[in-house]
Length: 235
Ligand SMILES: Nc1ncnc2c1ncn2[C@@H]1O[C@H](COP(=O)(O)OP(=O)(O)O)[C@@H](O)[C@H]1O
Ligand SMILES: [Mg+2]
Image (tube, rainbow, N blue to C red; front, side, top):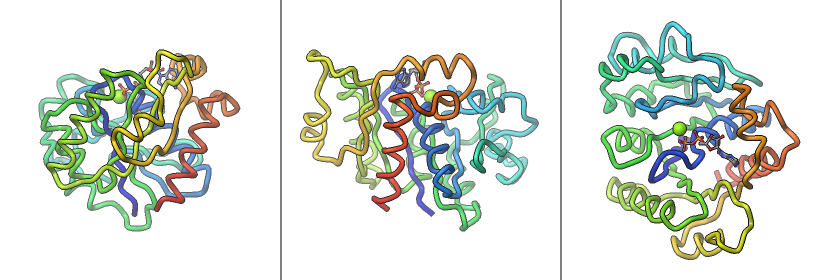
């Protein structure tokens, strides 16, 4: 099983969007895939799969109340999702440090486990990184986002992980942007994907559906399919 964590310096870079859609892409390619929302204080993955009202969530698992298998739900194309609770009260009862152990109980037949790590340098972020194996860094093509991502890289390395690559999201191709090739050179890491700025991503969020489902032919969807193919090949 490949355990991939998508991490970034801050929220708002499109991590949840990428976790959801890369998950769909992998499922479409016939890979057994489980998505986990480790972004416990900003849980946005569940709603994108209309799972905000489910009876059990990852929070119950991390509170030691139920096994992980009871908090995994079916999504499109056989994709499976472990959402975190959207109820603020439920964020209190969790012990994020249980995450690595909890995820180690997953069925070995799973091909890909994709973890949506929270932004920042908090204990939830540390727990999410420790639950994974391959750390993929997500950034916007701008200086602040890149320097925040570099801080996350340092933290990942401190924990013993060498990030496996970078995804640059929301690329307009404008001159004022930080070029992806430059990001790659600066960090000396492979560029796994460059996802264009695409209005369809926001339209899809508004519809409450991942863009790959709502607008499979959009430029973002095509780039995300390519990214998923690259992830499969890099394994
Ligand atoms: N490639 C893209 N093009 C346009 N909008 C995007 C793209 N990726 C993400 N977004 C938008 O950015 C916002 C933040 O995305 P989200 O996945 O919630 O980020 P994070 O999980 O990093 O906080 C959402 O409103 C989403 O619609
Ligand atoms: Mg998010």
